[in-house]
Length: 234
Image (cartoon, rainbow, N blue to C red; front, side, top):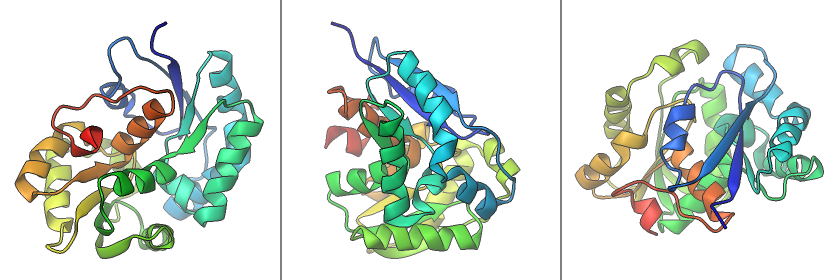
């Protein structure tokens, strides 16, 4: 038998389809479907997209493709409602037929645990109100945040961020006492920066898209590909 097909529900403005496919193993198949549009303001948008109703149509469409596991690949949309909100999203996906359901925020927590990191430096592009929700979500799951650095990008600025800019953000957001750096937001390009920064900083760098694909593929018994990325070796 071949590699099971997996699926991703992305927000309507997601632009990193090509990047997330880079984590697929040979022969892997990934289907992506998007939510309906939501208001453009950062907190308003992610709060709207945290409503499980936005997932029904794309999850059912992914089930029709035969996806064996489905991830909601939007970090803020899955942490903005806290632990209960994240759980409600997974339950809604399962009620729509997802054989296995996960979210980026849930995957990030599991990824940080997998690399043995409790003290975490966090980098994100959100407005301050959303950044505070992220801090609350991570601490509720046992993370000690050594530093949280928000760059308050407008929603329409995120797709234009380049990998070298992400590198600079991570360097700036790291802290000496952190056991890992977590980079939130699936809109940021991170595949090519993870391994070099891990060598430079001497610690794991866990990113939203990486954690999503790692957890999604693990759910179907497969391993994500990413040479030199510590999470994928854990």
